[in-house]
Amino acid sequence: MLDAYAEYAFNDKIAFGAGRSTWRGLSRFTTGPLNTLLYDLPAYATSNAGATDYTVRELSAYIKGQLGKFDYRLVVADPYTMATADPKPNVSTFSKNSPHKDFSGYFRYAFLDTENISTPFNSGTYVGKKNVLSLGAGFDYIHNALWHQDTAKNTVNDDMKSFAVDLFYDAPLNQEKGTSVSAYAMAMHNDYGPNYVRYVGTNNPATSVDASLASLNGAGNAMPVIGTGNTYYVQLGGTLPYFNKEKKNLQLQPAVGVQLSDLKALHDNAVIYDAGVSLLMNGMSSRLTFDAQNRPVFTGDAANNAVVSDRKWQFVLKYRIDFN
Image 1 (tube, rainbow, N blue to C red):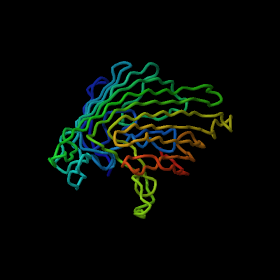
Image 2: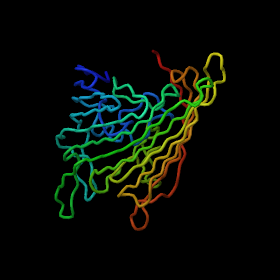
Image 3: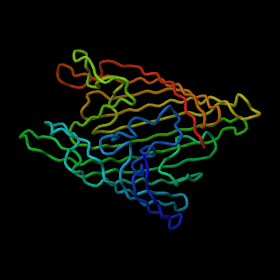
Image 4: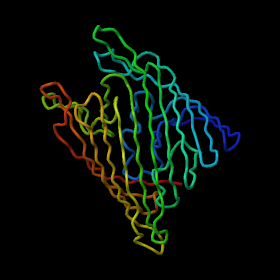
């Protein structure tokens, strides 16, 4: 069972819910989008997955609402404790002490069409079915979520503080032909304490690595997805004309994405590139996607700085079908 929560709506302006769910704030993609422009959501979006949550879910209570063109969500959650390690010198890691509450929120203004807030998920693309331009801002805060040792070997607790702003645009170009454009931009500041970096490999096929060849990334497709510092992300794509104009189906959806992270613990910026194309056979309900991703590989240099020493490719072929 993934989700189990109940909600009571007083009216469109305010609703209250509680239980185990993905309701949370910070940014548009923090809960994972319903429809992704690329093969998957950006890696930074669920950066605490498995650290403070379980399958991107927490026990939480939330309020949400929509006031005309403005909508909001505010969440108080009990984060899970996954950490087992003791504090490290001058490098923050998640604390194994009982965690404090996780406070988060996300606020959004729709300049054009409004969006559905009945579920925690936001759409990554409407494939031209709506005309959306929205500006959002959010936060996520956990008191004493991490810890480290200072130079005197004292344990110092670190708060987790994240702030983000994002802009989303999705619009039809020619509805008869099925063409559309979709764009997204996000800027996020994260403070996890000194020198925190998290390397994550999504659906990583590797479980270990030859120690003589090891990088800071670790095994397989792992890469630095989040850390203390700033992260920026842009995504652009759209749909091309229908192959079958009579039935209005079968069309290509190309997309590109770039993530740039300027993290305090890394000497070089971490830049991740994605380029992909989807064949939409029944809109987003039946979709074959190919994606090529290029990621940095970090190693320590002679001065013990984390630098990019190589770049690696990942290729993904994915089919998705939705049963409605």
